[in-house]
Image 1 (cartoon, rainbow, N blue to C red):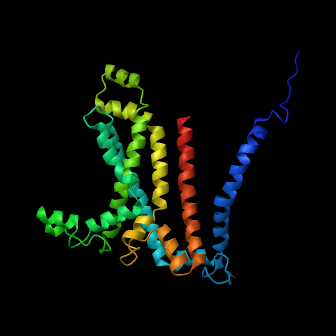
Image 2: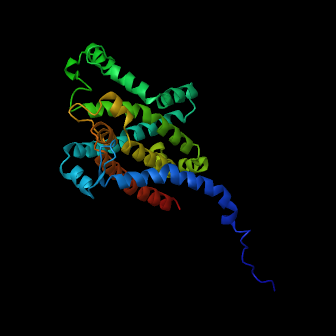
Image 3: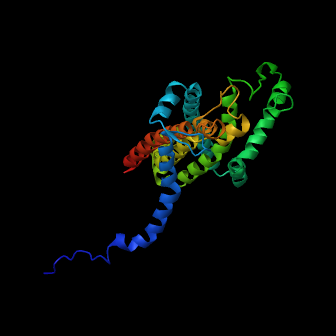
Length: 299
């Protein structure tokens, strides 16, 4: 009878993979983990980001942003609003476009390209396009409302505290819908045709087949889309910075932009890093449990 032989050190899969893993792990530590760790340490200091003097203040920066910084509260609220809107508007619109363009229609490829096009435009160009469209005097939006005879809807879209955040979000949704559409289209290619045929044989209408066959088959696509949507919403910065600079009256500040302004404009580097750590913590407690839950459901 042959005895079971334990794998030798040379035949251990981990040992074989180590030469390939080690360089990537070292790069990951240097470029990812070290900056995060350094930002975490700096969040306990009072520092202007320039001088050599740093004062240890403990958790005072965290206490200050939650108790003495009304802009942080506004930025936190706007970030939450941005996540909720992103989960509904670009996600739903991307799914509807994918369902429409998954059919055999004339110009299918052209339409897919057109709807995905905003996603490949640089954010500075997107911000410039939408800022021009919102121009109160010569912009496309107000001019269109005038021609339609609904002048009462004309707004200073980026100058009003009540609508500016939604105006900037519209530009974001314009760019975020295309990638969602593409991911849903990829998911629709994996919907088993035999299940759809079986549903038809059982007398299911299109809506019932969509609910009981298509939606469950799209679960992996939903997992990716929702996770990426939450992450990109939490760290949104470029459009806010370029279109409104956080204004008017801080009404469009989000956590990422307020981190930048605190650290590099107001020279409160410690408070800026504290806000960055709050943003990182929010991302982890939302995204990691969701991915674990969704992957467990798939198993």
